[in-house]
Image (tube, rainbow, N blue to C red; front, side, top):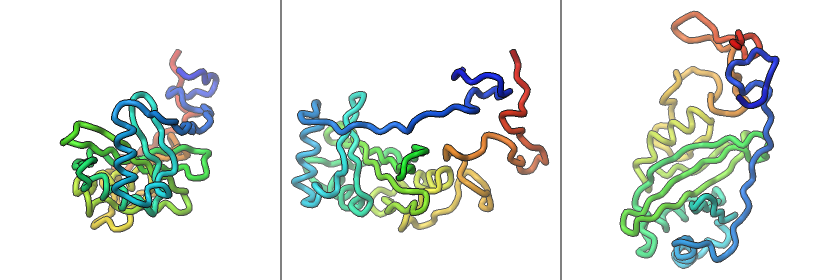
Length: 205
């Protein structure tokens, strides 16, 4: 599927090597309502200049890359300011850009029901220091989504009321959606079987 051959890997992912993608910063005017959102955030949060690491506009979507220590302040301003009114946290998820220094990204999608707008907040951390402030105090909907991101990616949400695994067993070793997590050879719990590594799977042609 991806040009990998001769390995016996039926998934198509074995041996696949990709450079980590780094989005470029957008330049004004951003277009759509994006300039209004960024300007309103600067007015509502005086430290926005230091908080926003980068503004990215890609595929018609606005992403604000936020410094970790400013996440709660930015999110509170996004929720409470009359010109922003992002009342709903619709999603918290993770991304692993393997090969980057700060490879783990915590991605928050906010929705303004008042103005019918969407924005993405993204915080990047390293595997050695994977801590991100929890948004559950501002957005209760982030509760189980932060647990899922912790479970799958190992991002630790400081201040979460009950940060435990939600998909994998409590004693599971590792975080399955990290890019360096093995694709096979892991014992399957409750069955006593194993999934063979990609290079040992039968290839059907």
